[in-house]
Figure 1 (cartoon, helix red, strand yellow):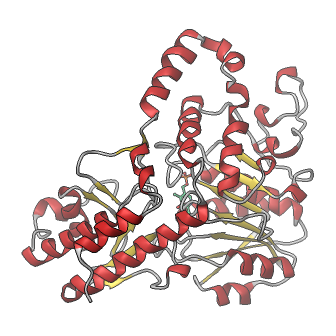
Figure 2 (cartoon, rainbow, N blue to C red):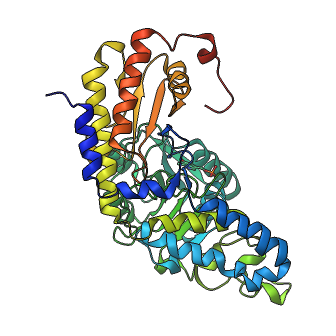
Amino acid sequence: MKLTKQDCIDLDARDQLAAYRSKFTLPEGEVYLDGNSLGAMPASLPARMQEAVAKEWGQGLIRSWNDAGWIDLPQRVAAKVAPLIGATAAEVMVGDSTSVNLFKALAAALRINSGRKVILTEKGNFPTDLYIAQGIAELFGSEIRYVDSDPSAIADALDDSVAVLMLTHVNYRSGAVYDMAALTRKAQAVGALTIWDLAHSAGALHVELNEVNADFAVGCGYKYLNGGPGAPAFVYVAQRHLEQVRQPLSGWHGHQKPFDFVQQYQPAPGINRMQCGTPPLLSMLALDAALDVFSGVDMQQLRNKSKALGDLFIRLVDEQLSEYGFGIGSPRDCNQRGSQVALTHPQGYAIVQALIARGITGDFRMPDILRFGFAPLYVRYIDVHHTVETLQQIMASGEWNQEKFLTKKAVT
Ligand SMILES: *Cc1c(COP(=O)(O)O)cnc(C)c1O
């Protein structure tokens, strides 16, 4: 039996996370399926930012470092990220970008495993991860071993020359998710350390870094964590490594006593040594407020909804779009898929543009991928239904085939 619109309305009525949607401000009528690139804005943010700018900065001036608690804001934000990724607050530092944190984590891991030369990763990893590894390899004289995006190829490439296994948990194109526990175990069995990039996991999947014994992780503040454009990122270092970790961006905020102004760098105890310079305070305050939306959210329940939204989308695509030449570019099994679904189509770019013109925002990734992210806190089942119905109309009418949709913009 085909799923109806009413079925989707019923699913929303039964959804235990449905109330969280009101904690976001979305444009009227918008269906937003790009929370995996830039999360939606939490409704509390404009007032919080107004207060931060007018009061804390405008009136408090430099006194706010003490009086408004700016100086230990990174730690307070880290304490909110930690439970979302199955870590303790003492293992998480918030600041800098994912790229910069990856640089620090890679350097730290290579120093711990200094007898080994190889960084093992997959060819299809997100470009910044590969580029940072290439920069690190030049500095450290390391070798990068690239393998196919396939768990058994990765396992086969693990040997006692591998210093670090660096993977992104959820692939940015296909949404395929690695078994973090199994690959971490296999890497550690040959003496390698692991670095997991949680850019497409944190805030959408149930992540348990401590439980799987992960060594390092990094992740993004502006995707499913909704911290705002360019929000600070995070880095995780397992407790057992904290006292020996050294990272080369040894800025003063990672110093044991930044306000002693001594000549010699001494790393701060624990995770704080992963800090570098002065954090972007306004962005940090935005992320801090955004994370409050997650308070009380059961991450297992969140994950279940993320799977259900993806399953619904695939089912409706199968039912309604079979004659238009779409492929499913993601695993069909929701346990092997993150919180996004990729469709493939040779006219993918123009089709996405036509959808955006109809108030449904997904995005496009080369060469032929239409990406739809399902942020479980604000995407409804009815939104998924509306998206597939609209896709059907765009294809049936040939609406996508217009000059204005075919010309590529700078950000796709
Ligand atoms: C989005 C994303 C990043 C982003 O890195 P920035 O330094 O914030 O630009 C990194 N890695 C992966 C896998 C991503 O998906």
